[in-house]
Image (cartoon, rainbow, N blue to C red; front, side):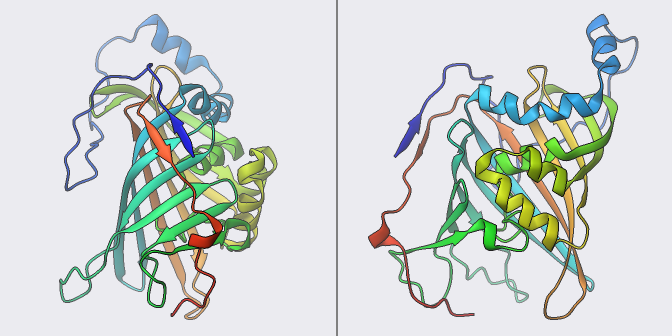
Length: 279
């Protein structure tokens, strides 16, 4: 069991229940900047982003919302998730909502996902799995390193991708859900990120560097004044193994309510399904 509660929260953040709940303010700061703004602009953006994952570990915990949009052959689907994450222990819990079927019927039960170093646990994974059992996946065996497979990018893996930033620019000040943030844009290299990542994410990111259509990952990230990620969007590209067409994926992670209580209990061996999962 991992249970953690931190007191250094950043205040209540209003979130809409049916949407991602965090809207990017379209207007930047007008008028003259402050000395602090000038200092931020003078910093090396690449160095700033390399420290983003470390700042999340210092923050301890947060709540998270995720959105993953996949597009191929004129078809576009969006998968959404919501949960909590402990950055110090690199464990989290998300409830992932699959999209409606083409007829508009919502026949999918939410998938509960537990995220841990090197592993993804899923309940309500699919046909053939008893409702009281979990499916465990070794993320290093996935060609995308579980950046896409689970329908949500592990929040800490999303942060550690920034360790692979090779070039980045400081776009300017804006806000996310009423919180002042600094917007950066750049490109990360998955192979570099894998070399610099923590032990828990190293092999998974190495697998993604080999499995994606390109190891270059464009991103937009928004950091608060403590250097913590409030929003990050990555754009992945991989080749569908069956149709051989390229799938474009936009994965967005939103972090808020730092210091939130996190209680993640990983399944016991007897609760993990060992049979075959139906296609």
